[in-house]
Amino acid sequence: MSDFGMSGDELEQMYQEVILEASKHPHGRESFAPNAAEESSGEAAANTTVRAAHEYCTPGESHQFNPTCGDEATVHVEVSDDEPHTIKRLVWDGHGCSISQASLSVMVDLVDGKTVDEAMHLEQVFHQLMESRGAGLQSESLEDELGDAVVFQGVSKYPMRIKCALLGWEGLKDSVAKALAAKN
Image 1 (cartoon, rainbow, N blue to C red):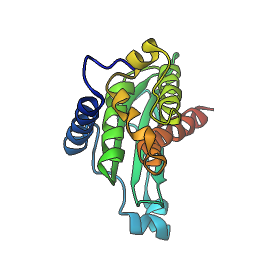
Image 2: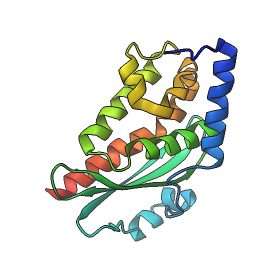
Image 3: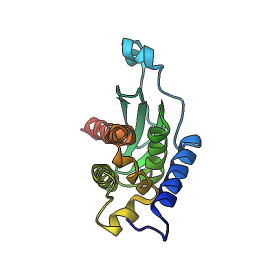
Image 4: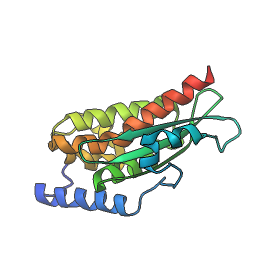
């Protein structure tokens, strides 16, 4: 990863600031998911109906939970019915640490409005970044594709925090799969 002419400590501080800012002012966050206690009892799941806000879209929704730290997120996506399938709306609800909340926020900024293929490519690249264990990606073009999401390179050094960063991305992948399956 390029160092922008900064020392390692300066870069780490910049990354932490970006993550804290994204977690304090999250993008795409809405209150729509049932209370987690109700969800686990099954009551909420039986009473929840997912609807698309866009007329020619199919919705998909996925609830993700990280039992290690208690982070949870419900990701709601609306995928266009026309080809190429495009993410017309991406929102989430949940709570957790600053890393999970910031990752969700950055993910929304990065993939909302993209085609499903583009979004799934970015999800794979983000996974590669998380698997790098702090080394980053070997391709500057892939880093450029991730935009602000490259700040999570520092998170990838800490195995216990990787799940926090991936929580929303797993929800994205699952909710898109559900939306596409519902089209058939």
